[in-house]
Length: 335
Image 1 (cartoon, rainbow, N blue to C red):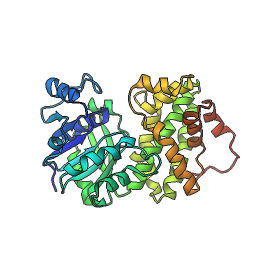
Image 2: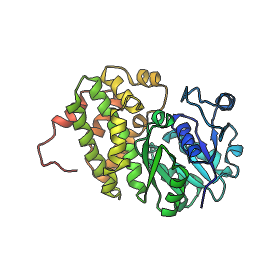
Image 3: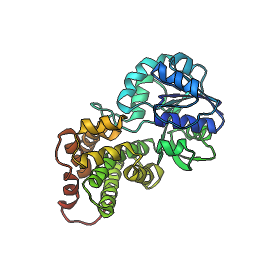
Image 4: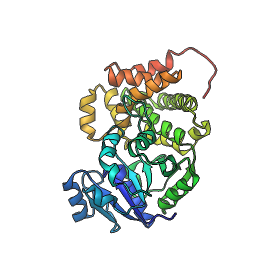
């Protein structure tokens, strides 16, 4: 199948950046925005002033706030909504999804209260077969991709043909997709790295240096590998773009929302004030408790995730991040 038309549901920074990638690959792209005024602004100015100011959008991207119009006759539906809003949104959109479309998840989170990965939420809410679903993950900071800086990603589906179709649809001069069949690994890596980025940001906000941050990243990766492996993922996935690649970008870049929230908390800010200042969803904040619950059910020890939950959900001191590393029993290093 060669896709010609794609719809991106969600006109935030990552949804808009991925629309640019699809358009760069030659597809006609419809960008759905929940707010009619944002859709109008995109149509009238050729820019997304709220999320990617200063970035020109090509003519093969159009915007609408009408979901039936956005989805009509499309080949690929890209879901770019915050993780905790995805199920409710799909309840509204599912009747309008084209029967033969491929669904693509950009969301990186674990659903609160259910512990469901985003692919599980999508399949439950739509009734689509799993072989027509793909997830995209990797070191994909939206602003850099919108500026057409070179980046790579992983497109994962249980059906290699679906992964190949989506990869072909988003392969453009500045975006290089690889394919995988490890949906579980890509989703666990994508969700957990946001929590580790909160921890690294908190370390930075506390004034700790690169040794400390590198230690948190590395041991955070170990926690992610343990959790993903316990849930059936391929451990090799965590050594690739969806694993260590995305982890490095999200933990170290000032463009990362989760990193910025962590920095603000490390400097003594309240969660409400820090999140309000950033003004966009930081998935690690909303998913950390769900990831900790998944780890508990799987019998996996995740001390850094646990310390982030204590900091975010219970308002405890950011110094717990260092405690999570330094108070551990000495033992051989293992991933």
